[in-house]
Each structure stands twice: as structure tokens, then as C-alpha cells.
Image 1 (spheres, rainbow, N blue to C red):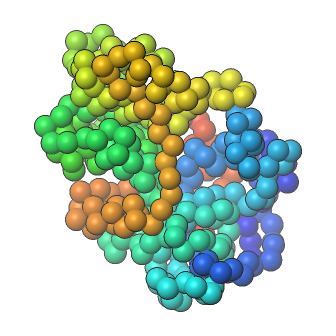
Image 2: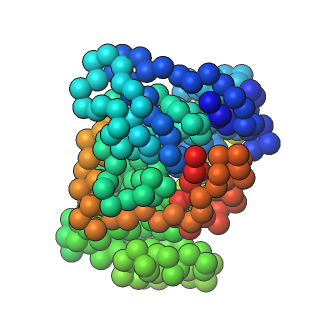
Length: 323
């Protein structure tokens, strides 16, 4: 089969289209014929091996442990391994795995769910990591309820575009923060208010929020907390822009400590992949409350360009690879 492979950590230039053996499903795994693969920020981190914290998490100290890139997948079950009970060949599925930039990939049954019936494969591939992360930020860490004021920083990105819709589905009044070029997208997602961060500073606007979801990953806690109510919650999703060791994740690591000395709550979110949250998302998607925003779809051979485009920061919603 054809796949996007890398032998060493580095830029998108290290990614190569090659022919490699088709995998076989092990116990508790399904073999998926890939129709589309999402490109999330984690792909860039695993490609570059940066920050070094990524390597310490078991993805390979000197080179990628899994050479095929891509973690979000949508496709059709080709075969199932022993002990698989929820799927059979022919089922349309979406979920997470290791190595989705390929014609076939094996995924653990517990990380896969049936594809929402009203989505294309490209739309479904945009959801598994980004939408699950947004769901856990809104529902679990932020505990958003009806009537609350919620601010989503990075509202035009992968996680942020889902967070806006989910917060609205939970009954909140939602304000999205994004760049000028993404304002129309954020409005179309249902945001009640949109702030262009290149022109206005939400932290000094005099508006206070019950929950702030920071998916952009580069503002100090001292800045964001200015816009929180006295008992408000700040949820930090991921981290970007820091040093080579932690890469911005130090905000998430240190957030709970700050909460010890304040009525405000600061939480760093580490999302967990599981099929139950995928099924919860399917219900929201099929009801019309949530819809993936896909900016561009690249063919498999151009996956390196898709990753490079993501890292430029101009993606409106998600970018996917079409197989």
C-alpha cells in the first residue's frame, strides 16, 4: 500500500510517499481502508519531535517510533481481528489510530465508532481528535451549562471551531476570538459575538466570562484571567509557542497550582481518546448541532503540503488528506 512515511524527525520535507506492506489487524483491532485522514496539530509535533516532551511520551527518542504519520481516520472496515465485537467488514467508521496517512491502517476497536451518517468521509476525518478534545474541554473541564458566558480563544481553528458549536449546543452565550480572516467562519458556526484579536483585546474590554476555553496556546494566565468572573474557569487546551523542552505545555502543567490561590479555576486539559465520546459526538452531529468545518482536502501525495499549511496558522477549521 501507499503511505506517507518519515525516517527522521524534521520538517514536512522529511515526509515521503512510499510503498509499504499492508498491516494486518491484531487482537482487538480493525483494519480500515482509509478514505480520509485529519491533520491535527499533533501531526506536526510528531513529525518534528518537538517539543522534546513529545519524545519522552514514548513516540521515539531519536526517530519516530511509528514512521507513518496521521492519527485521525475515516474509512471502511476491511477486516477485524480476534475479540472484535462492535464492527464487521463494510462498516463505515471514524476514530483515532497511528498512521492514517495511508491506504490502510489498523486501529484499536476501543478508539473507533461508526461514522455519522450525515457526514462525508472527509468531514468525519476532521472530527476524532479535534472534536473529542473540544467536547472534553466544554463538557468536562469547563462544565459549561445553559446561560453561561463562554469565550473561545482560537475559535477559527480545529479544536476551537468545534468548541464554539459545542458550547452553543450546551446553551451558552458564546464569544469567539480569532483573526480577521476567520471571523465569517466563526459567525457561521453560531458564535453570538466575534472578536478580532488583531484589533481588540478581550482581556481589557470589560466583559467577564464564566468559562474561557483557550485553544490558541500562547497567552499568559495573568492575561486571560482578567476576563474571568471571580469564580470562573479557564481551560487550557494544548500548548504552542514555548521552548524546545515543553513547547508551551508549561501553562497546562502549572495551571492547577495557580488555582490553589484563587477563587478562579485553571485547568490544563489532556484529552483522552475513546469511542464513547465519539458516539456522543455522532449524536450531536446527526442532530445538526455540530458540523465539521473543512478548509481544504489534499490528496495523499500532497500530505506534506497539508501539514505545512496547518502549521502556517491560516487553516479555517480543519484540513484533511483525501485517500
